[in-house]
Image (cartoon, rainbow, N blue to C red; front, side):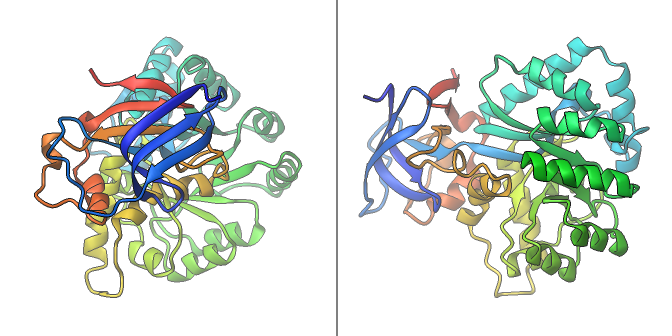
Amino acid sequence: MPQNQIFCRYALIGDNLELKQNVSLDINDEGMIINIEYDEIREEIDISKEKNVFLMIPGFINSHIHIGDSFAKEMGYNHDLKKIVSPPYGLKHELLQKIPEKIKIIGMQNAAAEMVSTGITCFIDFRERNMEGINLLNNALKRFPINYLIFGRFGNPEEIESIFKVADGIGLPSYHNISSKIKEILNFNKEKLKKKIACHCAELERNENLINEMFNEGIVDIVIHGTHFIKKDLIHLNKKNLSLVLCPRSNGYFGTGFPPILNILKLKIPISLGTDNVMANNPDLFEEMRYFYRIARVLCKNDISVKISAKDILKMVTVNAARNFKIEKKLGSISKGKIADLFLINLNDPNFYSINIDINKIYPLIVQRTKSENVKKTYIKGELAFERK
């Protein structure tokens, strides 16, 4: 017998986010979906006859965030990237050094609460301050209902093995100045523990030698940013089967440029999206999707062969994100055998009103119109984690 059941008038089901109606989920005591029942949609969606018509959406995955600096919102306003976030002397790192632990914990908890209230049920955090930073995050969220992966950092080679053991992977701030000894230790522990290594790359500028070195040495699995990649870099990335995470709002905030969206779309690279530093951007993936769409429209305007599907954008924060971090067996879609991480929006809210909603228009409606206040309930492992009053 299921421990819990959730019913919703409409839902996006499966890895292709297919719209279904009269959807019922059976969830076991481990929070896993053990059965899904639904009806096919055979006519135009009519939401005018009921006061509350809910749509169930798979929980979003924030593919790149630094949650630890959430106590320092807008302290980087109008300053360049290096001055604010470059380790070890950027303002962010100075603040992380001197701000009391209690304040940092409160900031993390508020950032996590904000994410859950916008439909984010999992985030990938890039932890500063080595083992201390990992312990701080685990302590801050030990009773908080949200999933997260930690990609830790190390201060010296002797820490690498212990960081690997307690974290979900390593998050390198750059591939610059990594010695042969460190690369050997990274590669050994990566293979031994079957964990991933992610690396910030080409966020501020393109260093071809460094990019090729990173690709050819085969240590890095996930590339963050790639803002200044050119087509041949993306082709190389694709051939190496590496994942790519974009943070376009962060690039805009720090004035570092626009990601190479045209070539990414033409090469069909399955990107995912992150919101990056909380001190610079609010962790809202609806805002990230909209920003991505708008700059993509500009960057792709001269190539009519490129179409920007709203469903594909939704996949960037669900299915693609889960695959990029190898958690697709548990997360990323509302599917039998996966964890029941999802949220509900009310299609009867005023900002969704339209005279014609059909099975195709629902996707741009979600991406372009959803605001945080439209998220009415968020479930994590089948349990209610947030409800908007």
